[in-house]
Length: 346
Image (tube, rainbow, N blue to C red):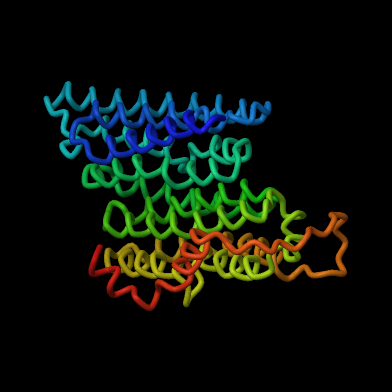
């Protein structure tokens, strides 16, 4: 793909995201979502591999269906209330349809089936875009409409997402699929808190984006698509592999790393809201996710020879680590001590 085309698609993604997150009118928000979908499709299918074409087709069909439901929900609400304002969603049927539409956009259970397949058919960089930037507009719409949505529906989806995300990630050998199920599991944490404390859900999303970007870019720099490849990459970039171990543990939510902060605050807020049972269930379910992060970390750093993998050892890479990766991994590990400042800003 030539640079001009890439620039156009990047600008379109920026435009679509900005349009959705800054609009008050449903039609403008819908237009932004459509621009985003159309801009990412060529990036998914650019390799012309059959799996990439399949991933682009699945993504298009799901996102088109979700966008239709967003439009249908807003039109139903406008029909009954005369309001096109995003924050004025009050009709119960519209609220339910919108919850389904945004769950499809994000990949929340039970509308999650497309996400691992699409991520598996994309490159790591496009996978990073799909896991972070493309989830920002739907999360913003969820944030704006959260007072109107039913907490019980969101809580059920959240607990199922955390359970299925952890459970289905256990058996995977492809790093992109593992990160897809990790994303589904993290979305569960965001969905459970958004009805009670929308700002906390956004903070969780920002920190998740930070840590996921660090992991995706680290995997991209060592070109690790499978666990068996990850076992032999320690010879290529030993220091990056060691940092990848800590970043994965941060994504799992272990203290004293950055990933512990959102989980701690969410459990605290849920307890304050007297839904301690849900907090206990989601905290226990996050242990499933911890297992496959530990598995990734084990494969990346602890499987030194002799071992049974048949892969060739990779040449040591003498190039310095990318500055972006260095900054993101540092932030993924070190933000917990400055959490009072973060909370004051948010």
